[in-house]
Image (cartoon, rainbow, N blue to C red; front, side, top):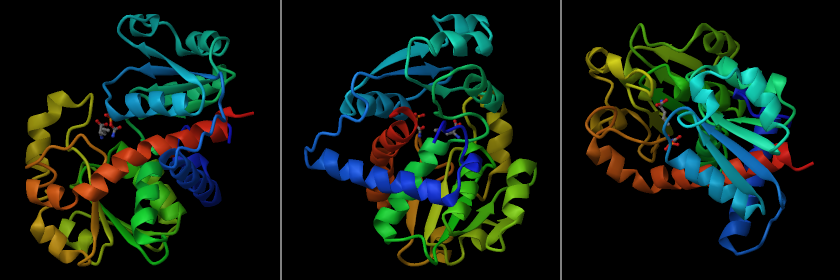
Length: 301
Ligand code: CP
Ligand code: NVA
């Protein structure tokens, strides 16, 4: 695996391969078995948006693999002053062994990979959040045993999370249904991909999407960078809160996931969130293990 830019670039087998390694690394971490696959290697981390989980799990992860991290925030670096990504890519490639980037435009991540000469890992763009969804898939398999016969449902905005869940979910063999209001649907590129799967459903009715689901997932209605649209979005997403009524449509043993941070009372009720805390916080932990697997797959040569 050369980079992780988006799940669209991966085959289902490659995704399963990463999940298998993630499971193994989780086992080794829990049992104190050392796994210094990236001894002495440096991960450069670029943040043009805020982060708690991504920042900490990547830094702890590279350390557990025997390497170390250097963090670059857009504020205080030349990136924030407009230095072209083509130049940043070529400079950083001479210092570090891999780059994790969280930014707005997917094109910036693609360009970083194109102009640089080290592996690039997408830590979230407006288009997708592949690291999060690898952790989500890992968590689903951990609790449900396998992906076979499962239906995954996403309720909310056609954002980075919905995009990656559609692609990842379908590629590993789950049925995927998504509910979003008109005007907030996933981009055409994602819908074109999903069109090839009979087990994909797009609706504006959350109750319909949740019917017989094994996994129900949601995310914030206003993503980073969309703060000015908050009011408009709150109105558009009325009726899309994952609550006990929506959960009553899912299978009785359905699990809920949320990438966090969560806004209780908006996209999910306090009740549903807390009933599913064991899944949601395992999902957060699995960021660490899934990303370690991604770093090993891309950076260990
Ligand atoms: N879920 C997620 O990516 O969290 P952070 O924004 O805290 O990194
Ligand atoms: N959709 C959210 C995910 C945060 C992890 C955002 O982009 O802000």
